[in-house]
Length: 335
Image 1 (cartoon, one colour):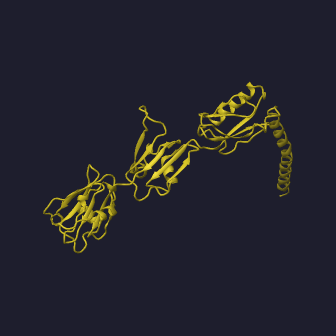
Image 2 (spheres, rainbow, N blue to C red):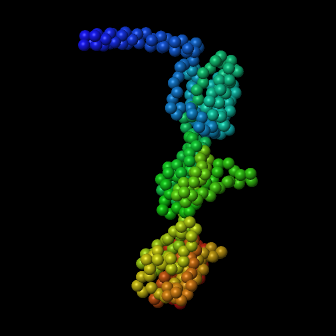
Image 3 (cartoon, helix red, strand yellow):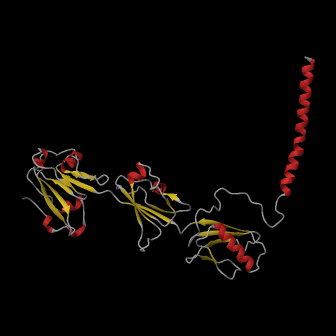
């Protein structure tokens, strides 16, 4: 027992000696690291800042940039890039091209200009982007919060739509994205993106990055307007370009109301901008004695009462207004 206790005491004494030598080792390590620092006293030692001066997007016209020249407060300032893409610094005779450059590239250009005009021998320049104004992305149409924001970095299409609150209930089956750069013919390039492919199928190719200058438009879905003696008059959205028939639209509107007539009418937009009336043998279709009738986008399906009263022009405009092109031939009372 005595021998074991003595061995443990010797071991503790040895470990205590190692611990006492640790401050000397740390001191030597710090001294070696300090000796490797740059000898230039004018160049500050900087630590990397999270998200600062990252080359995510090139500088554009009207962007606000912050220029800092070490030990030169007269040159350190925020500068708005001109519409022509140039900036001007005090004491420099010439202007500097900033548009299209990343912050690090502009730092080099400013340093070279200061050296060329013999203002500073070895300038240390830092450029950061304070505000982007050259890369707007607009999201409009059938979204919950239409907005415009600046793309400080490439942003996926889904994220842009998410910033707008997502799609509204009236959104159609596709999204139109106008590209920033025109096509070879000089006309805007518009991409048609399937909502089902983008959201339901999570197609990565459709969720491409927006870099600024794009316009995202979500058109409303085409609708069929149902009015008259049905239980649920409403505007019913056509899903993904599918067709609806008279029997289907009656099912969506929960069937006929009491005193509904035996003949219904479809009011369809014609080539002149007005609407044409189409008579539908409603009672025979429901009894399967006549073929079902397909309905098109923007049709008004009107079910009169059992007296056969047609829809009046004023009521037609309230259901689905199409402007002043509706002709007077649509003003009906009784057959």
